[in-house]
Image (tube, rainbow, N blue to C red):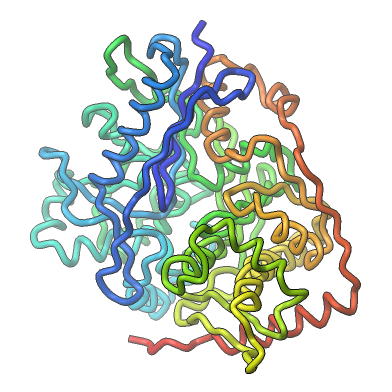
Length: 496
């Protein structure tokens, strides 16, 4: 029996492919950077053909590097940046506009229109989300409104919508399969997470034809096949990146939680088969759907996590390599009273302010580059702590342990500061590629590589524990300062 799983991890800044064996060993990994375009302030786009070509190239390179035949690969698992919206022509297979990335804020006025129509509560009750430009629904409307003839063609089913997973499956299967999974559908703001169907009220409000929408499947099943020299490979697992990471961290039981430190930060807690409605600005979403069982999750999103370090590197030119941030942060004992609130594209949970903007406060003549770098590092942990506080208020249970992953989880300074400021043990796994691993697990469960989630739990290994060591008074003082700084950033941009 085929014993290998190929994970395609299409993220915001890169497309990666990783080949795993059934013991979770990584046989090969390849990655291509993905260019982001910023045509106007607050707008973020990508070329869908670039998404496709970088992902396909990474896949072919992994197969070549590993010297594993396609016939020995049990399945392909796909995980992807969520909410990013692509519309393409069914007949030509070409995009009709650039992909509008999840970070893009151009549809804030459309969101304001939905709120003005009194749809906020309907959105919350049906989709588990709050009205925000973050999600796919308003992005679909924007493209249909701005590409001539698109809405008429979409009504005929000649223009198709997909999140990145749908686009990749369409391309990989040669245009034969137009689907998405429940975790990605749950992030569109037009999908009812309780009935598991597209919501007609929201489709009508946004003037989105149902004919353009993908069929919604579970997260672990056979969706179609990829024709390759040497044999076809089935696509057997799909999950949005954060749900895939939750699964890859083996957070299978209610109360299990993980945080991914990527471009943004995403904290998810498994709430079991019951959807938990948040009273504190968190989102209710689908954690995973396997077979006929849907598990739900509470989610908090930080829009700018690791991206603040990229900003210091690329725009501010404070250092040449992202990993240098840890070195500079340790050169000073504290930030000297400096706080950086990286609200570059607004603030996510629990504030949900589309008009917040970044601010740097507490500067003095003695402020150095190291103080600002440390403040940027700490800002990531502060934002995550805001989510942990909101989650504790919703569930009534403070989290005692948090599983972590993502690129910035390699940063020991950040992980220790997270443990200190959140009074929470941090568990970092041996395998950091938990997003890809989650897609791998889902694909492997559908093909019999693994028999059960219990078997997967036995495979999880912890690499490092970080225990809180900060004094209570210091923690209270730092959190008070952070709250003041956030207050300065709120409602800054002009409303259109």
